[in-house]
Amino acid sequence: NAGVTQTPKFQVLKTGQSMTLQCAQDMNHEYMSWYRQDPGMGLRLIHYSVGAGITDQGEVPNGYNVSRSTTEDFPLRLLSAAPSQTSVYFCASSYWGTDEAFFGQGTRLTVV
Amino acid sequence: AQTVTQSQPEMSVQEAETVTLSCTYDTSESNYYLFWYKQPPSRQMILVIRQEAYKQQNATENRFSVNFQKAAKSFSLKISDSQLGDTAMYFCAFEIKAAGNKLTFGGGTRVLVKP
Image 1 (tube, rainbow over the protein chains, first blue to last red):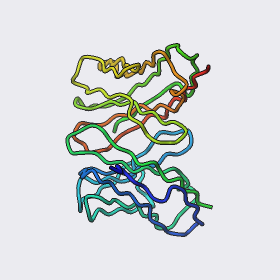
Image 2 (tube, chains in turn purple, orange):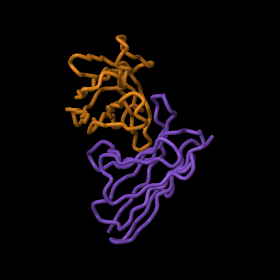
Image 3 (cartoon, rainbow over the protein chains, first blue to last red):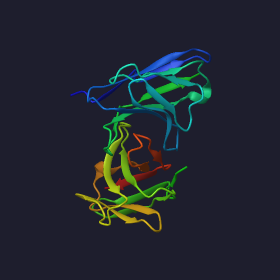
Image 4 (cartoon, helix red, strand yellow):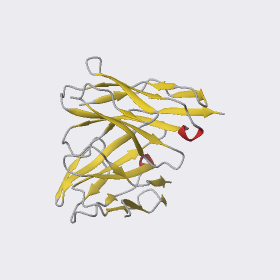
């Protein structure tokens, strides 16, 4: 059972480039979310989804897009990377009505 | 909006001793969860312990226990018999019940266990 899988684990981008961070879970969880973690700070919510076809913004959504075409996948798109988006990104999933979030191992993104 | 505050950026403790991490939160909600997550150098987020707001009894998981004071909006974590493997960042987090994986995190406390 793989749990929550994020790819890639590390990425370096140039300012203005676009890319997609992948997140897949094999636990049939309804809820999925993306967080970013900046140095010395806790995780902050970027976008979340309560099911396929349904997404909404979190605390820091600017510069990011998401879609949820399947239950399993929840990709995060950076439209035009900026140095301020240098961070570690975590994807998480959970069952409806439960309280435990399962996290991926994170993607360290550097924008130069 | 909810806020979570961890006032101790860093703490150190001798192996086998006890350390207590502080967390306060602010919310107008009545039905919610509180969590402590551990993040070792591998950066994996590991759930340590959880507490449902409507439960009076403090949660306990082996060497980890919490002191939940709902009226004071306080949620501290006690690590007993500290082990070297407990060295990590610890994050306090809040979630409204049934809100769907929308956690609000504190800024974290770095715990160093010394041999």
